[in-house]
Structures are given as C-alpha cells and as structure tokens.
Amino acid sequence: MTDPIRNLPSPAGWNLDSSYGRLPTAFYARAAPTPVSEPRMAVLNRPLAESLGLDADQIDDPAIFAGNTLPPGVQPLAQAYAGHQYGNFTMLGDGRAILLGEQVTPEGGLFDIQLKGSGPTPFSRRGDGRAALGPMLREYIISEAMHALGIPTTRSLAVVTTGEPVFRETPLPGAVLTRVASSHIRVGTFQYAAARGEKMLLQALADYTLHRHYPEAAAAQHPCFAVLEAAIARQAALLARWQLVGFVHGVMNTDNMALSGETIDYGPCAFMDAYDPATVFSSIDRYGRYAYGQQPEIAQWNLARLAEALLPLLPGDEPQAVEMANGAIEGFEIHFQRHWLAGMRSKLGLFNEESDDAALIQSLLGWMQQTKADFTNTFRGLGDASSSALFPDAAGNEWHQRWQSRLSRQPQSAGEAAELMRRHNPAIIPRNHKVEEALAAAVEKGDLGVMQRLLAALAQPYDAAPRQAEYRLPSGSGSYRTFCGT
Ligand code: AMP
Ligand code: MG
Image 1 (cartoon, rainbow, N blue to C red):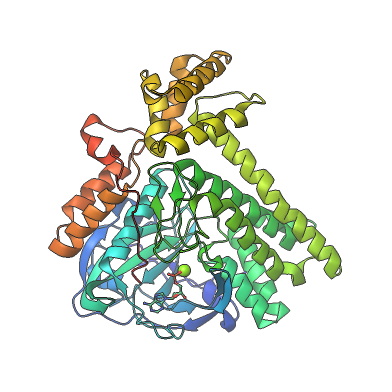
Image 2: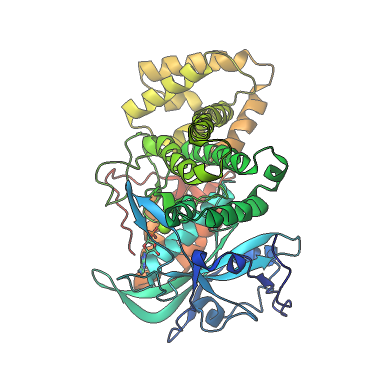
C-alpha cells in the first residue's frame, strides 16, 4: 500500500518510516517540536528501547526526547482528528503532540514514536502545546503498569524535563513524554474523515487501518465491514481486561479510543480500591459518565460513532449499511460478556463452566460493594489458603462456602486453582497513594528514586515479594481525585 521510502538505520537504531505522512494531507499538519532550554532525562525505558531495536546507551540523550535533536530523516507531523468529548462533537487534532514517525523494529513491527508536550502545533487552539512533569510521569507509570498486567496499551519510552515552567493554576515543571503506540488512529480520526465529507479520505484511512492493524480483513467479502467488526471485538476484549483489574480510564472520549485496541491517553485514570461500580476519579467527570461501571456501555457508544463514520464505506444502500452496522455494534456485548466471564472464572480459579457461574460472580461483587471490600486484595486473597478470613460476616461466609463447593466440582486440584488465580489476580497495581507519593518526590524534590522503586514493583504484578507489602495497601480515603493537569 505504501511506497518503500525509508530512512537508513542510524547507529542508535532509529529506523523511522513516515507512512502516516503518505496519507492525504488532510490527515495531518507538518509541525516540528519546539526546542526547550534545558532538557534532562527523568526516566528512560531501556527494555522498551531495546525491543524497538534502539541502542539504549546511544539514545540515552535528553535532547532527542525533548525534540531538540531529531533522529535522521524525520518528517514530524501533528495528526488531525475529531471526537465526542463528554458527548459533544468537536474538531481536535494533536495540540501538544508530534509524531516523529513509525519505528520499524528488527522483527518488522511498526510503532509510532510520538512526543507529547513538545510545543504548539496548528491544532493547539488556545493551548500552549506543553505538558507538566507530574501528568507525564503519571502516564509513564500507569501505562507501564498496564503493560506488565498484560493489557494492550500504548507505552512510554522516556520522560524528559524541559527546564521551562508550564503555567496551569500554578507554575509547574514542564516535561515531554515519548509515547510508543501501535498507531494513534482513533475513533475520532474516522469521525474527522467522515466530517470532511469526502469518501476518498474515509477510504484512504480505512485502507491504512486495515493494512496496519487488521490485514486479515483484506480477504473478507466486505473488508471495511470486517475492520469494523474486528475493531469492535478488540475493544470488547480490552474493556473486559480493564473491568477485570478495576481500571478506570476516566476520559473515554471518542478521540481517546484507538483502532489498534490499545489503551490510550492516560489522563485522569486510576485503579479502583473498594469495589463500587460508581467509582469516578476524574475531577471534571461530574455526572459519572465515565464511571467504572459505565465503561463497557460507553465503549459501545463510541464504537457506534465509529460505525456511523464508516457507513459510506459499507455495502448496499443506506438502510442495509445501517443494519449491518447495528449488527456489528450489538456484537460488542456478546464479545464483552464472553471475555469478562472467562476472565472472572479464572479469577475465581475455575477451569470449567457451570450455568450458575455468572450468579456466583455477581453475588461476590454484590458482597464486595456492600462491605466496601478492596477489589484487588479480595481477588488476590482468594488464592491464599486462608481465603475464608476475607469473609468474616454471615453473607460473606455463605458465599465462600458456595464457592468452595463449586471448586470441588471441578477435576483440578486446589493447588492448580490457586495457581490459576495467582496468574489472573494481580497483587500489585498502581495504588493512588503510591503514585502520588512517587510524583510528589519527583516534582517537588527532584527525587526519581521513589518512582523507580514503584516501577520495579509494578513490573511484576503477579509475583509479589513479602518486602513489597507497602504497594499492596489500599489508598484509604475514598475521595481520591485526579486532575487532567493539561
Ligand atoms: P486530551 O484531554 O489529552 O485527550 O486532549 C484533548 C485535546 O486537547 C487534544 O486535541 C489535545 O491535543 C488538546 N490539548 C490538551 N492539552 C493541550 C495543551 N496544553 N496545548 C494544546 N492542546 C492541548
Ligand atoms: Mg486525547
């Protein structure tokens, strides 16, 4: 699909393609990072660098990740997109992010390398194009935690401080995050193409998405429809993964949903402590639109916006296209339920299926909500020999016995069930108070050691060592609020 112009690999391993730049020019604006006065490395993800084919020693240079120096042959751009923000449609675009290109890995993978907070672009509107250190480290921590949990996500290659303040409510230290993604194609990118009203743009984007993420759809009778169905299936799988670990994204606008099926745009996100479907962390989500329990429904709503955007490319006349699209969107619920139920069975140590399993799970969740039980620690505790101690009250005790007899009806041993549970119930998640502690040390004292220790613990979420007990304590206060901090 794309012509093979590629920059020669540099000694550091940079091998950046510019396939997005070969889309019609409506999809982006040329924009270069604005150099900063005093770039300093805050954190570099060496294992990620190596997996991208980069030499971690040679790229350990803050000037690269600040945008002061560009890898050879880079043609930077800002992507155009639109999106429903809290339900309202708006034209957006990268206002503070710049795509350097797509790194071609030694295995032939293609990964966007994007600088976030690298200065204004033609899409910045009234924004300064910059980012503060706290939110960029936050994205680094949470995205790497999600990756270690095995959940599809964009990743973080580096954070550098700029030596320049950004002005929010107060002056804050500025920073640039280097984000690595399978792509930055969003539901909002399709909405943008549809809003432009040129079928050619929509077709070009759909072809690009197909080649990049869903090559198997090329063989389908209706390739665009196959892309839609596959994207819906991937989001359903992703949402189930979020729900199974208590992750609250916080701002599921359609511009923050990626066609790759990766979690993207970590803003006011956090992990739930006590189980409650109404959990919201974002200070600006006043009506709980993006609460924990709403997430699957919102994902489906967003995917309906994707389907709407794709209608002109679906076969048949409009009523036929709408019917096909509706069928695909209904498929979300089926996929989601299947993934969620399978995941919950594993969390409970169940290898086989019984018709009452959904009721057994709902009963546990109901008890957890009533007793304000910690989501992560309750599930993790199920795999311990002393699991009955988690359920001191009569209702809890009854549930525990019901679960025990369910376990006894499967052929696998208690040891095998415990092992299954250990692999599906993380011990260590990025607890809000530990994330805040790490950010405060970095931002207020320039001490990055607290974050490094947190990152090390988060890298092994399923095998907690006894010395890591401090990372397993719930955050306590139920009124934790995250601020977008843009
Ligand atoms: P987000 O809330 O990060 O998903 O961003 C929503 C939109 O606002 C995107 O188009 C961003 O590029 C834009 N934006 C956020 N912060 C800034 C900023 N400081 N300067 C310019 N644009 C921004
Ligand atoms: Mg966004």
